[in-house]
Image (cartoon, rainbow, N blue to C red; front, side, top):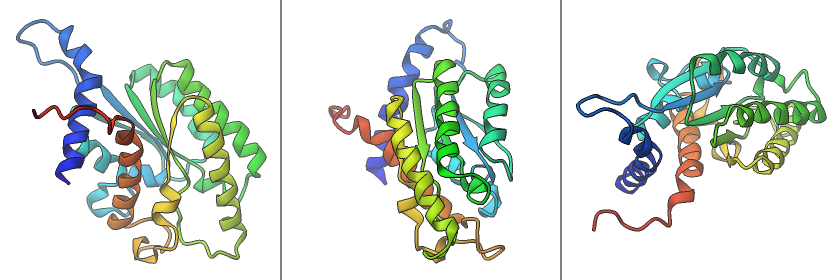
Length: 219
């Protein structure tokens, strides 16, 4: 835990330092924005007190101001439509993306891939340098179901498209698949607090891992 906090602090200082230097003496600079893009999982549905994985990621990166750009039930089409409106209000330093669960039953993998590339290109166009995409978290689908097979296809699409555009991928599927204890007692679908923690940890590993080689700043 202490190592994670130390790495998080280094990451936050590296990105936030230029903004601090530009502010007038005696003023409190605004925090750079972390924009969490997604659906009901990003909203934090069924996590304790609604404190889902996006809030947990923000807790580990206190130099940032969390803004949630997510709506329960949204699929990738609504996310794409909403993004320009979000950028009218925010200029995020980094973004996490969690979409796809609500498209498992209504979209083929080829279409999802095309739309996912479109979504990432919007982020690129608005100048976001740091983006971490979350593979579709497991939400209780049996291995013999069409939804399970489609989730695997979606995750392949995410793993191909995201690094191709210079962004990183978090293995949120691998962090949750088969863990029935991570599913909410309310509906057996959405993650509970433990499930949100597993997703947050996967995201934080992907966000912080690229700076693991930094020298020890405590010396």
